[in-house]
Length: 238
Image (cartoon, rainbow, N blue to C red; front, side, top):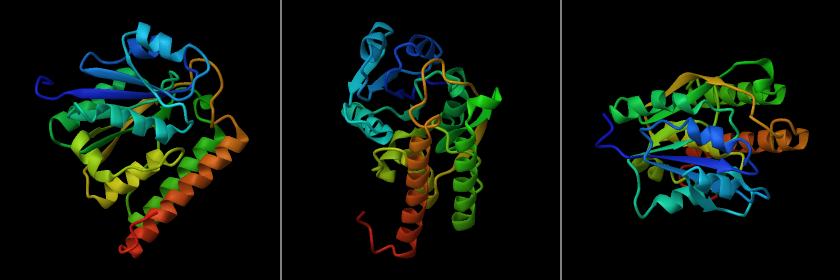
């Protein structure tokens, strides 16, 4: 099924040396390239990734979106047909990536999103739950699309991702992609997917009040920015 489609997986990682071995073992065999995006780690994340057979892209400047952009830049000389994103902390069930690849490879969808179904209450913090609810309700209000989640695990055609002109360097990456996909008329579908507590360590955002506030403000700002850009389509620079 996948012989004519190449698939790359990007895993932004900051101090995830403990989680990475099990995360990388769960990557489906259909994935051709796995890139761990070392986002300023102070542990052995890069070494563990290499020892586990992954490629390592180094982006020392902190920022989830910045790490994703660095990974995309590393693929430009030999781009895949399909590109996927997931967290490297063990919370995403990478064995379910196949459910996201299938509709894209078949040509049925352009962007496939994992809608997180927490396997235990603490898998998603109260801040995350409220932020997701607020952001998705605002998107429904302004755009009429009923997203259920802004989770990290997703797959998209490389050519479509290039057209989205992704720019966000931190917390707004996921919502920017989902809004621009709507604006571009991509075929989008969310697929319910089990979601676990991170394997080890502390979340850089969800369990940190300041980080949660910063992420929430940035997500709301991106929603407002993209909405205003459509109201005033001649204002394209930001």
